[in-house]
Length: 382
Image 1 (cartoon, rainbow, N blue to C red):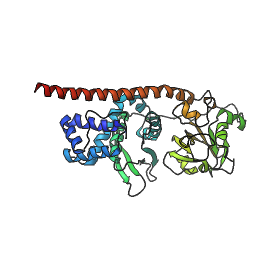
Image 2 (cartoon, rainbow, N blue to C red):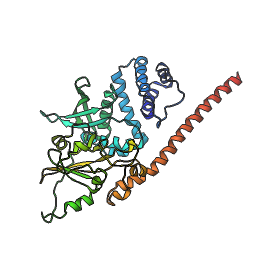
Image 3 (cartoon, rainbow, N blue to C red):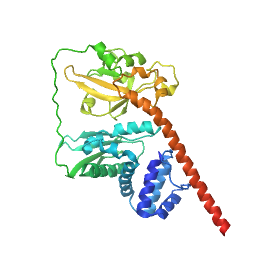
Image 4 (cartoon, helix red, strand yellow):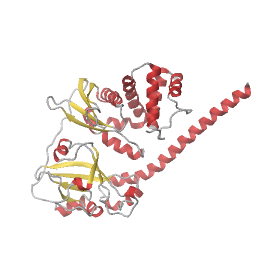
């Protein structure tokens, strides 16, 4: 777990209960460290759990209450850390925000390598259309953090008070389900969507061959998930695809969202960002095992005229080296695709990230040295 989680917990305790209480919590949690947690350093999950357990014992506050408070503090910390603008544009309502949260986490996964972010998806309750949030995480027992975050998001970003209750726990299924109901809202009107489409004629304008060149990263499949068309680059790096006999499940597995990849599930989550990963042995590339799989990120579009779905996607890679190791080139990405700029910008970000991380380590080391000098000075004075 990255240090920004522990640092946010530290902010919650120090601001509410004082520095001495935080030092006592660290001592009870057997955390032997001076100074603050480093935001860009990875710590063992056990440290976070021990800190929460120690906080419960010392503060005499139930764990669920602390976790919900932490969720509120963590959101505020993210706002203060420069993510306020991207959080504001994720959605106009709590539902839209939550539906786009996976896309943000996937983006942050490129900024923080090795980050194991949770996954979210939304459904509606059949009887009344109420919002159900599905929460998937490898870390058990932290669902009340989600409650704190969602309530704060609804209140601060959307002017809405929501009530959240756990519908199903991990004991009942493989994830946690929340029921979210709106109590009050200060929004005066709903955003109206205009679906009017202007066309000059219904005659076919683009051939399949041209479409495959214009969108080199795409897969088109029918209701049985049988692939009927692929982009030219997909066909090159995954030569085992046999149109009309090969299914999506034969070559790709789902990373996000957490759901079984069926035609009906895709249609019911059509406005969700999808991240799919090639299965082992599918790609024909001369590279180390860790580079023999490719993540494809994009959206599903339903083609009503033919009852087909097209997955318009792009390669989710860290930098140019990450791209070329998988047998791809910058020229494979069309000029109109913003992925070109993202890949090139990631080169600059990686250099800045390493510089910032090293600076953070150096600052922490200097602070530790200063504390040691202060201790020696006190000894000398005595």
